[in-house]
Image (cartoon, rainbow over all chains, first blue to last red; front, side, top):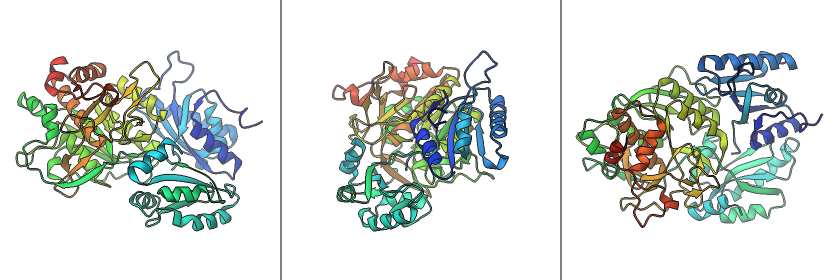
Amino acid sequence: MSARSRRSKTLVDPELRRQLDQAAASKPAAVEAVLRLRRPPTRRSSGEPAPDAARDVARKLLTRVAEEIGAAAGDYDFNVFPNLGYCVLSAPAGFVERVLHQPEVASASANRRRG
Amino acid sequence: MSRFLSQELRSRGQARVIVVLRAAAGTGAAASKRESRRLAPRFRNGGSSLALAASLGEPGEAYRFFPELGIVLGTVDHAGLVALRSDPDVVSVFGAPALSPIRPRAVRAAKLDKAHTWGLDRLGAPALWQRGLTGKGVLVGHLDTGVDGRHPTLAGAVAHFAEFDLMGRAITPSPKPRDSDEHGTHTAATIAGRAVGGRHVGMAPGARLASATVIEGGDTVARVLGGMDWSLGLGVRVLSLSLGFRGYWPDFLAVTRILRRKGVLPVFAVGNEYAGSSRSPGNYSEALSVGASDAKDQVADFSSSQRFDRKLDPIVPDLVAPGVDVVSAKPGGGYQSMDGTSMACPHIAGLAALLLEAKPKVTVSRLEKAIFASCKRPRSMPAERGGHGIPSAVTALEAL
């Protein structure tokens, strides 16, 4: 399956896409992505999760992805911004790609811009 | 040549560029390192590149080589750019926009020889002080290069301080307020500097700051998000940002909407790259975008302005405020004068703090509208450059 066909419906900014494609084409390297979280899909309301729920949403999402692809806890790093409903993730490109498919992720962008 | 590059070369005589080397990224590290060394004379050993190299851990180097990417990041003048573009080992050269503080266009030594700086007088802050409004009880978020909390004018002004790492985590234990540069101390004191010897530099001398270091020395989106999240959790009502990406980047768009929804007025500088340019997040419809004016009530020539193809708020900046020859605090003591939209932005953040003390429950939209309604634009100031014009503290209070 090509990288393009694996892409999710999550809004992904072009710079993050470039970094993911570049990382996938070379040796495994960590990609840093800033993720905007949304409330779990079981709830009717959309929008960012409440501050006390954002950490839980991020933790469950990343644990699920790690289990799906067999990644260890040390393979990725993340930090949650609970008041904003955002999370920053540092992980191999394949891990980040899988995270982008998850329903809790509304959009994603690169943490580091060119330069 | 891109607009960014041509503007940089015209205005600064040099530009920050990314040079893509012919050796394939990740596969030709050794070869491309040789190429990068051969290209070294093309780069200027100027201030920007030195600061950049220092931030990347290579102090003294005028450029930085990234072997896995097969690129070189550095600063060039026009001749260096031409030479690079004609070099057979170079595939392409393009401008390198980066998240950065909006650097002042000029910095001068200054003494504080008047009771108020001209900017405070122009906006009418002393008239609100006389009515008992100093911003007391209002917490203002200030994300910048840090702040010198020991400066006399900032004594008691910094309620909270934090530094954030590249993943947006607050560094622990929390250090005492300090400035990694001098930009943050200047902007902080313009918001909430206290009177020293009866002389004022701060718009809201009773307000308090939640000030954080989020920029310089590894400038990532997460650092700024960490500072925003932290300040939101502390209950700020205004967020002053004198930093941004050159051009339009949506990274902070959703966050800016969240700030507004949570009752925080986002006051962002528009940039110092002249007409036809702007920076994000200062160019969002959702931000109160601030440009710079001078003592003659004209838009400073360097002040960015731009029209966007959007229905809501197509012109940035929304307004202009004093941003030329602004005297404020210098780290270590004393004062200095700076020019820039970075200096204009904290004037408006301080104005918002004064108004919020008067009406703590006012909504963000109402507060913003009151500030806009108070603006006057001289006939000589085109709306395309100055937006609504220059606000008045007294009129804004009446419009609340």
